[in-house]
Length: 602
Image (cartoon, rainbow, N blue to C red; front, side, top):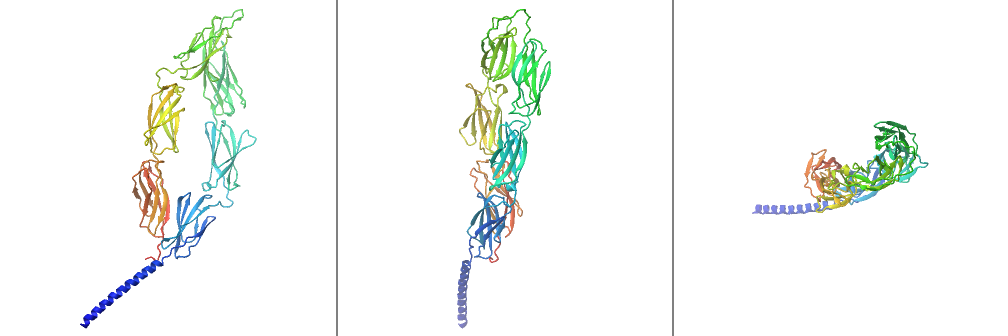
């Protein structure tokens, strides 16, 4: 009985000891938890030159610091520091960044402290421009220049002094762009340019450049034609010096029966040039081309067709009668110009001159009371002048303004439809047959995109239209109709899809742990790029490429990527790219360091 009692007593003692041990263990656990330290936030974040410093968080042991660097709200870099300094010489000069510093102790994170700083330009640094270029656009010139990329944010303003070749003083321009548009320049005109960078009130060294507008040929313009029985006399104008300063050397005449070169001593006035072609046959048609030679070469020829007057028998009497003027009765739909007869003088001929504006296009002499001008451009308005001529005596000219009629049932349709993307816009271009280039008053362009049920309608006076802010891979349907004098051409339909383009992801957030890195990524907006995104790729230096399939949708929510199984306190580099119908995008490069393992945590 005593042994049994003792046995029962030992069992009770063991139960009691176990209960006491469990109580003590619970107390130790609670005490350990109570001893965990929450680090104080850092303060006094200061940027000195390219070193970022902050006051130490001292209330916890084994404290580290995470530094997030943002610009304009975009996360650009993440670093871990073991002390209270970080060298940031890799950041761009003159750019403003926000530094977010967080203290970490035993994986417990303090409140974040922010400081916005600008990376200062080192003392004594000189910023100069380079890569000066000039590009002519119609009658204007775009001057452009560049600075070293590391100083791109320091070039807040440029001071430009621009000397035209005949200017006594320069034009001073202050601009925040790395370019300047000079309007209404002349070919071969020379400019001297001085450019300096201005930053924080300081002007950096001046750089000098020279630019000459490219050479271009100088086409002649016919001012007047006078002909008799044996000669043709013409007056020619050269392109104005204000439009083309390239030195003119000669005027060339190349005809079916003659070739003439007239040397020219060029000057800014450029007076009209008189050209006489003698020794011709009476009542004969002559065709010849007139060109101008300058330092750029020989111009496109101006084509001329002129008929000499007939020779009348010499009579020993003077004609007091002047041929009566005629009445120009009109231009028929088949292209025949008609006029009434001048009846008071026998053998009267008629000089017909055809002009557009003040330019003489054609001139003919005929015995008839009509002239076939069906070769003229359809729908274009001409000035017709008819002068009776009898025995080389000119009567008073008569004139009429008339438009060459569009033949009945002519269908003017657009063709050669093209689309060219210019940044985020698309330039639509089309053409009509050259015979009808004067026959279009306007075009009605109707545009459907893949989201619209009803089209947008545009009334366009040119043979093109700029469609703004398109999305890559977006499909359009176009309906185009020409209109002239109330007559509509046939409707033409065209389809166009904006070419595909890759879409690089953007980093939104990085959260690192001891053995893992978690990132959040945003995809390019659907309104900018509709090309179907199928996957996101992560390729690192210590892990194989991981593919994250994506089911694309217009909302395009952020993509969460977690990388686990990493080593503590190690730097990892990896690239993130997306694949869409255009292919795999340029990679977004990331460098992130995992947190260290605290030795006190088992």
